[in-house]
Amino acid sequence: MIGEPRLGDVFGEMIRDAYAVATGVGPRPLVGGRLPRPVIEIIERDDGLVNGAPTEHYLAGPADWQPYDRRAVDRVHGRTLDVGVGGGRIALHLQERGVPVTGLDTSLGALRVCRHRGLRDLVHGTVDEHAADGPRYDTFLLLGNNVGLFEGRERAPAFLAALAALARPGARIIAHGTDPYGTTDPVHVGYHELNRRRGRLGGQLRLRLRYRELGTEWFDYLVCSVAEFAELVHGTPWRLTDVDDTDAPYYLATLTLRR
Amino acid sequence: MIGEPRLGDVFGEMIRDAYAVATGVGPRPLVGGRLPRPVIEIIERDDGLVNGAPTEHYLAGPADWQPYDRRAVDRVHGRTLDVGVGGGRIALHLQERGVPVTGLDTSLGALRVCRHRGLRDLVHGTVDEHAADGPRYDTFLLLGNNVGLFEGRERAPAFLAALAALARPGARIIAHGTDPYGTTDPVHVGYHELNRRRGRLGGQLRLRLRYRELGTEWFDYLVCSVAEFAELVHGTPWRLTDVDDTDAPYYLATLTLRR
Image (cartoon, rainbow over all chains, first blue to last red):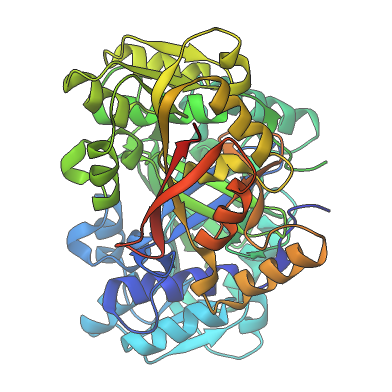
């Protein structure tokens, strides 16, 4: 197929370059070998929509965070797992505050950047794989819109079961999501309708990330309302105990492990 | 095909949004209906490479131009055709300086933005189509890397013939190009080799632009050395009379109509 990417560690290559731009560590990308090239994350959706987004935010310090991120870290207690640690911005901040924090990611390149930034406790893999390792946590962070990792109705119970297997008594999940249904943009409204017709949640995005010559496989990433989120949590080892929607359509959902 | 865009005026939609961000004219793109979304041009190459680039430069004033653009406009004389006028940055500057300038573009959306910015003389179409309209010019500008419009060995003679048909005696073409062969990046070096194996110039890019749900057809866009450019011009109604490579790998080539 013309124009098809090669499979690879898209996020890792991208965050390495973003880190080089931000710090001068490693060669930074150039246009024509001369002018700086901004590092852009490219996200394709299966209806043909594509979006490009700058990547600086993955490495930003607390002063440049959105307010919900600052409120999220204030909710952390005890041993903490940052699920999808990415460029490490959240975990680094917690480590500096003395919180015992572990960064989990499926991207080896992301973990390499985190290591270079000074994060001490890093694990490569999924939550399911990590559950077999034996550690237990008091707080799970799903920031950077990582409610997305629930994927949809099929994956959500297994995902929450894996987190329960990693949880100490009284553990909490603090998850950042976005309600996608406020839009009137026909491109999005039509996509939500298409999804529902094919038995998916409206905001159950089918995505692929691309960076330079690399692409990921297509994967599901969930953008859902608080009501949909509550429905997904129902009947799992977790209870939805708080919703902070001060910055709607963005929200922070807190789940607490059932006793 | 999963993830395939719809054909449409990619550049026009993109520049309309970039203009909205820059000026507040029209709705500006948002993330989640709340945070501003940067306007990013997405360029796919047929080997699977993809690049995203911010779009502000399409609307920038002279103070933010690269030095070769400022030197290019200083070379303008007489009635001028800006080939691929885009967001109108070059033509607007010339019009303000009193140069009789016409902006040509195949994007209706781009022409709409140019009109709104105050450009008076705008034509929709290709150089071939415009040649039939009867006007004649002293200067043709191919800036913003628009040596690319030569496409390759097949298109270059017809493109230069169309410009000759639009030319007054003594007319000149001022074209901005980039020598692509200084790179050691294996992704690019490998692509140049692939191109030569299939009988194309090394930097004869096969590209598609995408913005949101829209994509262009795949098209050729030429990035070539000065030597290759000279070879393409050989035997046409034009002579290569000057090369300014002060900012190598970028160059300004001046072609003069043969008497």
